[in-house]
Length: 134
Image (cartoon, rainbow, N blue to C red; front, side, top):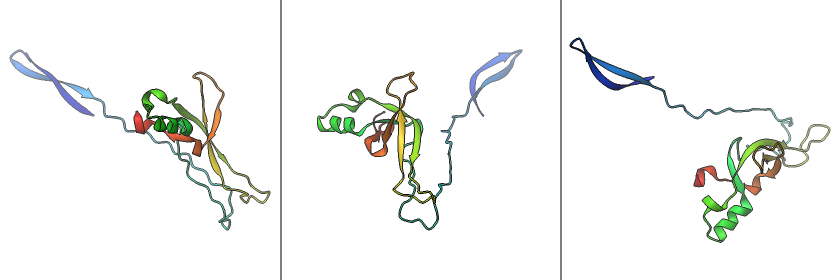
């Protein structure tokens, strides 16, 4: 913890300096969730990819983003932003635990504040916005 000098006062002819503790700047906390995919080591036709987005990322639909670019609209005022609230890894496995197709990520977002209903989107349909314009 660091201390900042606030004031110097004098009592009985002796100067005293008053200090105030300054809290440390918090660094961003990163929580990592790991899992071991149920895939055989000899199965190299398909593989598990890292997710493009993470919980809490602010996103917009790619269609709306491209509309703003095409018509030279200000994204700050013309985009509907959504927060990633859920993630799901979609993989189809055979009874012998082999991948039948390429696994992919889906992201759940809420379109209305205070609702529990999620709308699921695939990675290709979303773009991260928070760092680009906010």
